[in-house]
Length: 457
Image 1 (cartoon, rainbow, N blue to C red):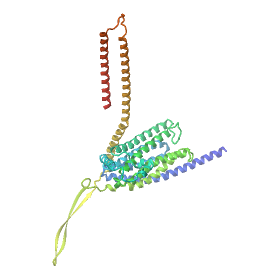
Image 2 (cartoon, rainbow, N blue to C red; image 1 turned 90 degrees about the horizontal axis):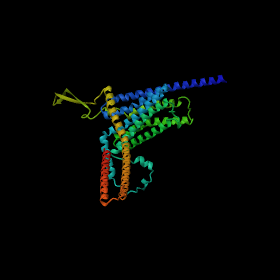
Image 3 (spheres, rainbow, N blue to C red; image 1 turned 180 degrees about the vertical axis):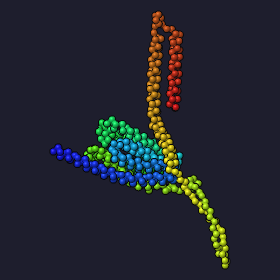
């Protein structure tokens, strides 16, 4: 019986190795397709790098496919690198979402133009009459969730700030949670795919899901307001193709983990991670095919001459025979051709510009987002300090009032030598006490002014 059990285990392991090798071969074929198509599209953008404000973010989004495909096949081939590959994928996923949002802003002409556009939309909305003769009851009966997603409550510059904050907070939290997962895995308390309270996986999953949904909501709200102005770039196709990669892969991983936890799928070994990596390899080939059409570089081959193009003229002289009367006459004709070429740049120069300018843009937005997050905390601390100060000043007032009452009582009492205070002595005591009270009031007023100045700063 023992020999039969060992033989069965050996056969199971052999079959598992065969299936694993077959999965690697199939996944590698899809990865090759994804890498080839993505590299061709990226090189086309780098070669015709005529609109840096838009194309640097397009290239960042396109790089998502090679990054996902490469780390997935590596993790499938060598499971020991699975954690490091997952961290790399998570970090770039967050950056790609930020890049897509920045691309939409660039297509609208930059942040200043977007602010002006949103302010105009706000003024238009405010000028619309509240009642135009139609029955508004059907609208009031609509579900609050539908109104929440379809009717933006915030317009103007505030909407742009919220959109950027939503994207950057996801980039920060996703990166932080990825490295936190690595630390927890090293100490053995991460529990990838385990929905147990003593593991870190469920808590990190909740935080990332909330952050991701908030980022997606901000992006959807921004798209809802600006989609008409974005029609020339076919925004819906770009939005769907991008969202399918970022959000579908994440929820796919959560779904696989849940099915393994419920024992619908096997839990032994690295099956959960390997299945996720295998599916991503296939999905990246499909995404690369979609990107060839959705993020094509053809629109950037030709731009207005005055802004981007290079003009060259070529004049050719030809002798043409013209019939005149009964004979022929030779005539010299000049033919001028005007050629307009879009400027091309080297791949190296384009990559340098993307890394330098794009990196600086990311750093600036991260600093701004951190300051926006810290500002309410600073205001809260200031409010707490003011509250404690007012409480302390109130205690001093009560204490001084008690001292005055006690002193008034002492004045009416008998002196140590047995005699009583006369009226002049009582008046002198009251005057001295009044001077002390005035001095205390001045001190309190000075402290209040200091608090107001601190709060103003």
